[in-house]
Structure formats: structure tokens, C-alpha cells
Amino acid sequence: MNTVRFSGKSIVITGGTSGMGLAGALRVVAEGGRVALTGLNPARLAAAAELLPAGSLILENDAASEADAEALGAALESWGHIDGLWLNAGYAEVGTLESVNAASFNQMMNANVRGPMLQLARLSPMLNADASIVVTSSSSTYEGAATTSLYAATKGAIVSMARSWAAEMAERGIRVNVLIPGPIETNFRHFMPEASRRQFEDFVVGQVPLKRAGTADEAAAVALFLLSDDASYVTGSQYAVDGGLVRY
Image 1 (cartoon, rainbow, N blue to C red):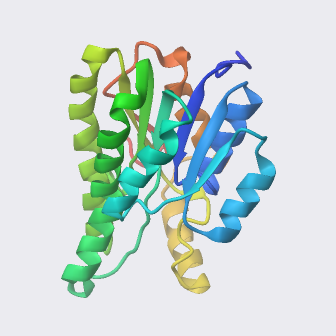
Image 2 (image 1 turned 90 degrees about the horizontal axis):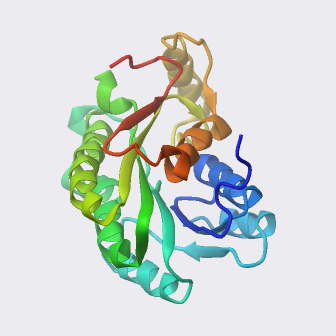
């Protein structure tokens, strides 16, 4: 394996202070790159700063905030041009159709759909030629599971946006691909009560042919392949990291 794939490269990871994003950041710096991360949780921001070397940029930033897309761009202006952008920030909530209201709909759409769109719009001029973009979707897009309709809709929108971005940005030599994580061992379902979370995860993992959840490192490894020059002829694609859960 090429262990210096990111030598001299600058990689931005939104939602990068825990789980897959942080695993990816640690791999980038281990392979010679520098990283800028965004997150919301103060404790995780501080912990990420402790783990990453000097020169890393750790930013408090909310993907659901319209103003924060501009703030992210402003914070990165002095950091320099971007070679890789992993739009990973987002969140999940599940619930019955009847539990959805205008506020919950707007909040999730703002974080999971509007956020990446505005972030990319702001950061696009800062992307180097031959840069790579990875967008995190979810296997929920394809599962058709009960109580996930709003979340699945947001992650389906990500897939559609990325396909259009791949066509548009190809003129600049920029690649755009989608990561489709299945059940990954992260803190992503922290919003659920412990008993409900275990029940949900047991149900989902029970449908995975490999009979286990994936790790954050396993998901990050695929994202970093797509961000690296190893995937120089890959764009407009979807890469599932789901143990075979969704065989599309």
C-alpha cells in the first residue's frame, strides 16, 4: 500500500471530530497530509486537537447553519487550496411518519442536504484541479426501513446531488464520489436510548451477510481511497461499506 498518498496535500473533513471522519483524519496525517476538521461537540473538538499534529485546523461549525457555510470558507481562506473534501457532517433521527413536523423536517434537511450543498458552493473556488470530493450518504437510502423515511430522503438527495456534481466538476478535473456506510460502529445513533439502540443495531446487523457491524476505520479506508490518486479514474460512483447489507 502507498503510505504517502497524501504527502503535501490538504484535506478538509466536515463532521470529522469522531467516528469515520476522525478515523479518516488520522489516516491522512499518517500518510503525510494535513487536515482541517469541523464539528460541534466541544469535548470532541478538544480531543481531536490533542490527537492531531500542529498545523491541523479544528473548527466549530454547524452544517445546519446557513451562516456557517460562509464561516467555514472564511476560516479556510488563509489555510490554502484544498486537495480533498469529505462532506461527512450530518445526523440521523428515526421516528414514525406521524412524528415528523415542519421543524424536524427543516432541521434534518438543513443539516444533511442544504449544508453540504452550501459548503461545496462556498469551497468550490478553493479546490485544486484534480481535487477529490467524497460525500457521505447511507445504506438507509436503499433499505426502505420503517421509521427512517426522513433520514433516508436526505441521504438519497445526497446521492442525486453528487451525481450532478460529478458531471459539472469533471470539467475542472475534480472527482465526486459517494460513500454508502451501512451499520458502522460509531456514535452516530447516540440519540437513541441504549436499549432501543441495541435492539436496532442487532436487527440491522442480523441482516448483514458478514454478520457484524463495520468499524470506523473500515469506512474511512474506502473514503480515503476515493480521496486519493489511487481513485484517479473514479467519479460519479457509489461505494458501499455495509458488509453486503444492500446488494444493489
